Image (cartoon, rainbow, N blue to C red; front, side, top):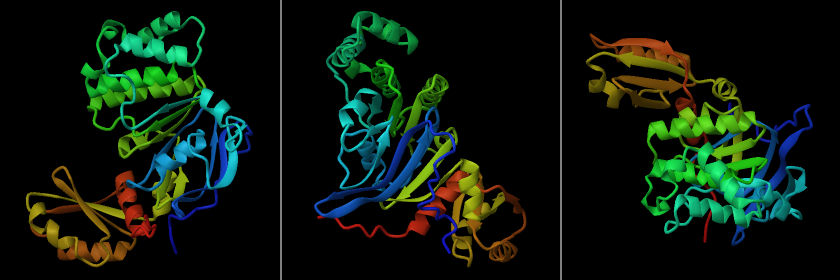
Amino acid sequence: MNPFNIHGNATKPQNTDIAIDVKGLVKEFNGKAVVKGIDLCLPKGQIWGFLGPNGSGKTTTIRMICGLLKPTAGSGTCLGYDILHQSEKIKLLTGYMTQKFSFWNDLTIEENLDFVARIYHIENPKECTRVTLDKLGLTQRKKQLAGDLSGGWKQRLALAAVTMHQPKLLLLDEPTAGVDPQARRDFWDEIHQLSLQGMTVLVSTHYMDEAERCDKIVYLAHGDIMTQGTVQQVIARSQLFTYKATGEAVRQFAHLIKQAPGIEHSGYFGAAIHISGHSQQLLQNAIKKWSPEGVQWQQVPTSLEDTFIALMKQAGIDQRQYT
């Protein structure tokens, strides 16, 4: 039995105010399926996180939802518009922030925003640019070339650019990769403010602390959904038991205990070691064997990172073939 698998159980909420409602999304390249039957139902005003290993289909799914890629199969709506036939309307109501900084390095912050405002045919683009600069804390830097900005400031510029037309849906593809913790925290504070104003957000990330800031998370592997729900629901559904060892002798046996029966994951957390598995008895047997003097064991709540790693192992080897 797969304790994680709730594929096909993307139940539509009683509230019919839905931002994204897609069923059976498939995307093939050269006849090979990269995304294999995604069902997703996302209420307006919520923040959902896309998790999964590299190449799991997160970016491809995001691009199909917002109309940048046409699905090979499947159907659905985004912001009330058909994703197959009304993609241009969806694009006008969506802000999409890509993994790579995609604005103009040889233009200033102000020039970038003014240009984007004109692309969206915003009335009074100069005033819109001024308001956006002020809102995102960019006014003092408005004359700086985008190419000279640090990763955190580029991120802030990109967020300003994709939200200045006041989209209903914000799609973020690993938006904080490579930026410092303070910049990530500031970024997420802004995302939550946008959500409070009614904006719907779908964000792909590899950072567990970011996933925990989402209303719900969806875990993809090999082009398919393995599980979805709140963070606590996903962790509980994993049925994992986790123990922590502390003490000066911990590192001396860390490489040995991971080979014990029943231990499906072990890793360092600061000066401690965490072990996880689905059999509490086997974990306790290992603990009895590997409890040298000076080492203390205690059961701890399973973390999202423990669950993430277990999901990766559950998914196994990617069987999709590429030409």
